[in-house]
Amino acid sequence: MKNSIKAMIMSAGVGSRLEPLTKFVPKPLVPIANKPVMDILFDNLLSIGIKDVVCNTYYLADKIINRYENNSHGLNFNYIKEETLSGTAGGVKKCQFFFEKGDTFVVLSADGLSNADIEKGIEIHRQSGAIATIGVKKIAMEEVPHFGVVVTGSDGFITEFQEKPSIEEAKSNLINTGIYIFNYKIFEYIPENTFYDFAKDVFPKLLLEHAINTFTVDEYWSDVGTIGQYIQSTKDLFEGKYTCEHAPIVKCEKGAYISNSSNIPSDTKFVGYSTIGKDVKIGKNVVIENSIIWDNVTIGDGVHLANCVIASNCSIKTNLTSQIIGANEKITENFVEI
Image 1 (cartoon, one colour):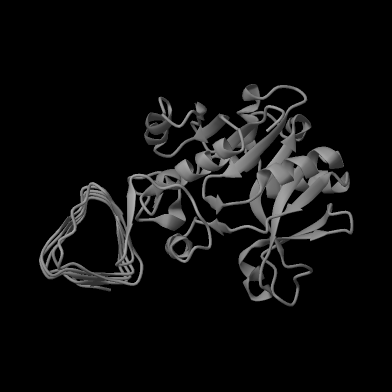
Image 2 (cartoon, rainbow, N blue to C red):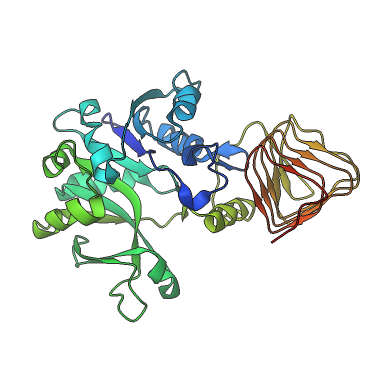
């Protein structure tokens, strides 16, 4: 990128919609095929020459800081630790020190998985003179009630927001992806030390000034903020709907992403799409079907796992179907599925 651009990743959220997976792991470190979502975001930024990044942290902050403070990504990682949550805009305001007057900068959500062309968005933003530019994606009308919808004029600038409208009420099928490009002037619209939200507090003011432009995200995008979307995003990777660098990962012919530090017995049967994390121990005659297994999991002899997510450091001694198991759990033969 010709001109130096900085970025912020909003990473203070508690991740309650991903429980129990986020009981011991902050949302940005939840893995997609054994790679934390935040790693993928950083890789995407580095690929376009953005290496100066700041994050606001809150929930399990030290786990994020410890992973990236002395990183090998080539990233200039900076952070703040929030004592109380400040909202999306409030968190960005607390990172104002990181940016300089006149800067154009990128803000991403820590649970937004995408191959969006951010360089295109930056160019559109700079040419338009907008204060804010939002990445928007066209979706099927039947999906509209699950998202924040934007309505644009012929110039691409936003004229209206609709929060999760019904299909009948929706004036558009363009949704807000949470990919933002801002001018430094955005800070004038966010008060100090106040819980403040972009959607509820900042964007309505900018609408009155006709100051929010858009760029289309034609590439893959997914909100990994729920269990359902987390599972779907892993499936999307297998189906080639998006790509990201994965190491150390081996994609085996049996249909699984397997960390190269896990030894898989030859009698293990994979059905559908599954991922196996680091240092996983698998017993004899195990069947793993459409399941996501994190690091340091032990799976007993003869176990059949189907449509499960098993977080790190678990011991599984019985068959499970459609179960989400948080970290450090021991599931024995006496476990009763609900």
